[in-house]
Amino acid sequence: MSDPNNPEHATTIYVTTINTEDVTVPRDSSVKFEKEAYYKNPEKYKNVFSKKYLPYISCLFHCIFWDSKYPRYIKNKHLKKLAEANKLRLFGISDVTCDSDGSIECLKKFTSPDRPFFFYDPITEEETHYFEYRKNRIMYLALDYLPSELSYDATMYFSNILKQWIPNVCHSDRLKPLGEQGLLP
Image (cartoon, rainbow, N blue to C red; front, side, top):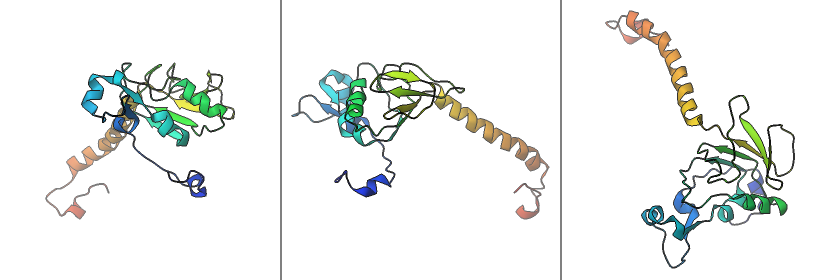
């Protein structure tokens, strides 16, 4: 982003994929990032997500694998510093990874289908389920079984359609031209 004050940025939606190599740098600046070396020796690397991307992000769909041996992507202190400086743009996180106290430090508990969101205040570090507008408050979705739930929804939708089609296909006359077989549209 060459000019962060460009008014076009206020009316444009930018979507990007951020990979491990985009946010991880060796602590020794003379060394080049190599993914295999990072996986073997993560303590020799630091994460720059909070400096490089966090000040510019409004919504984060987080689905990067993380383990406690790797550096965090977002620490509470990073969120608090941006909020106190009135520079926090982040208002929503959809966390598919769901690492409690993990890559996004403020995630301490998971949500449920009946209460899919909680709201996190980075200055006070308080969480609430009650929606009311407050500056710097982040809406957080953390359904730890969301990936399996999406598959379940897609399977149910497809199987309900298939249930209607199977008898129709079985009773159609495949010896006739396609338009005359009696198939559903």
